[in-house]
Structure formats: C-alpha cells, structure tokens
Length: 241
Image (cartoon, rainbow, N blue to C red; front, side, top):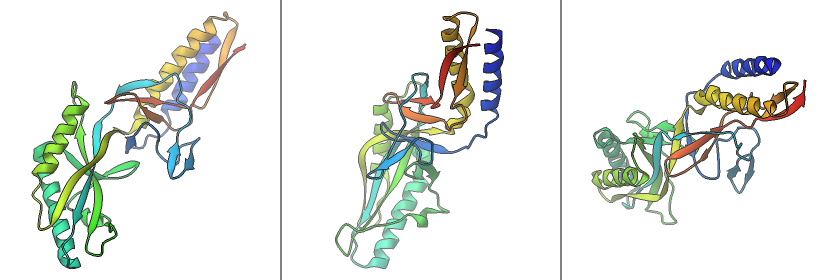
C-alpha cells in the first residue's frame, strides 16, 4: 500500500498542475463542450463519453434561459433600431433584476453595451421580420429552486421595455452552467485516488493500481434540477505490485 499511496500522490500533483481555463460552460442532459476528448457529432449534437461512476456532485453556478428577441417593423433600418433599443433596455435592466445577459451555445460570454451589436439576427420566412436569441442567467444561491430561478427570469423578460414592434419571449426549458469546471480537477482526482486506494486494499497489501485519463479535460453532466456531475474520463486497473 505504501507504493500505491506514493503513486496516487504523484498522480494528484500532476493533475493539479494542469492549466485551468476560466470559462463558463453550458450543462445539459446530453452534451458537453466541443473539443473535449471522446466526443463525436450526430446531427450537430455532441454526445458525451459515458459518465464515470466517480463524480463530484455539486450545485451549478447559474440557471440559464434562452430568450427570443423579434421585430417585424417593415422598414429594415427602423426594425434594426427598435431591436437594438430593446436589447439595450434588457442589458440596462439586468443588474437591478438580479439577472445577467449572455451569449453562447457551449461557452457563455457576457452580452454588454459594448458588444450587443454583434448579436446575429435571422428571418422567419417573411421579408420584414428579424429575430435572434440571447441568454438570461440567474446565479444559483443556496436553497434556490429551479422554479424560483425560472420565475425570476420570466419576471425580468416581462418587465423589459419593448421598443416599437419588438417582442421578447422565453424559449423552452432552462439549462444550467458551471464556471471554470477545471477548477474542480483536484477534488475529482482526490475522489478517484480514495476509491482506488479502497479497492486495491481489498486485494491485499501486494496490490496497487494503474490509473489513466487524469490528463483529460474535466467533463460534466446534469445531475438534477440545479445540480451537476463533474468528472474525469479516467480509469484504473488493480494489479499486483
């Protein structure tokens, strides 16, 4: 067991030395960030590797809701002016309402008065209609339920002053996000090391483990209404020293 302990300590130190990327990522029941190891695309969906049974379960950082912004003023320039005015109203009022405005399908980025004109608009089959989506987020606080977060977002969307012929509408069910999942790498490796130590001990003092996958990116999956699983696609094999 002495050799096992030394090996696991070395693995933990190596994993903790890995760089962390301070980004916020979207968590759904069926996908994780593109570019992680072990993913492949099917009809534009990202399919995760199988979740490890050794996972860190914790609260998500945000509840995230998609919101549609649409306008159907006939004159294109006037329509754009109205859409941008409504979007500015949303950004201006977000802080007071306790929400944040953002963009992103996988990685979440703030939508601000500096970059709001970068929002991409599409049509809906009619020449005089433009629409786009953005995200409204609520930071999860201890004890906050998904229903409470949804209600806060809905109240905010309803309260935004709409300019001209613009509308705002919540779209679908909210998802969750986690800020900088790689910051939990050390805690996840601790869980793997503890489990490996216990399992190897069952076979006797002459057994240890070989661990692989600790150098892979942290992955994530939804664990409940407001909770997520964070894990590494790591495996270990018990073997005789």
